[in-house]
Amino acid sequence: MIAVLDYGIGNLRSAEKALCWLGADAKLVTDPGEAARSDGLVLPGVGAFGPAARALRERGLDEVVEEAASTGVPLLGICVGFQLLFEGSDEDPGEPGLGLLPGRVRPLPAGVKKPQMQWNQLHRPDGMASASGLWGEIPEASWVYFVHSFAPEITEDTVMTCEYGGPVAAAAERGSLWGTQFHPEKSGRVGLAILANFVRHVESHRRP
Image (cartoon, rainbow, N blue to C red; front, top):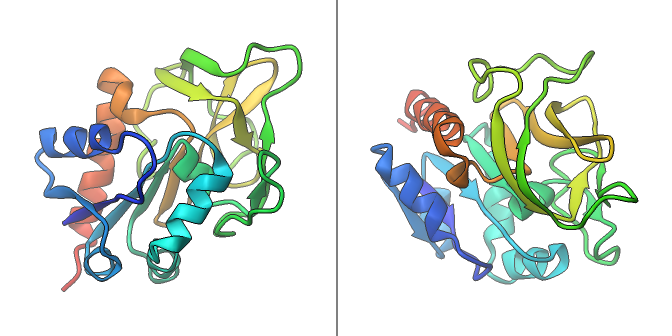
């Protein structure tokens, strides 16, 4: 079972519906105990970093995410859910992130329209970690859909970028931990292919 973590932030059903359409046993989960028993976790999120981080902690779901990351349970963060995986965000400097990935979330470059609310192309950055898992068969320059004003710093975990006033982190990977700044559930065939890769990975790492 894939638990789509429901911590009261934004429209979470689109990710759940996309996973179910692919044939996954996915559902919205609010109970930390039930989420902890799942075979895979999806951490969606829209809106602002601070309220999302506080809501996740108030519901006790932060510990579930941290445990999954430490034990290799497949975990996918989407949009603000992706940002929460980092140490913190300039959007709300007083609210810490989960710290599962190094680096901070920064504003999009100066001089560009904010938010970036559009389709944009994915690029594999030179010198960055080789992509596997969710990204290995995703063609260069694939189009996906973004809605955001902030993005994580580009680090050694960054496996996809887009160009928006300069290179912007679009996806990261570390072991069985993945994140996308774009919305795969709103990104047509490419997004569904990414989610299908996640479902296959969850199935191959199912708990005994």
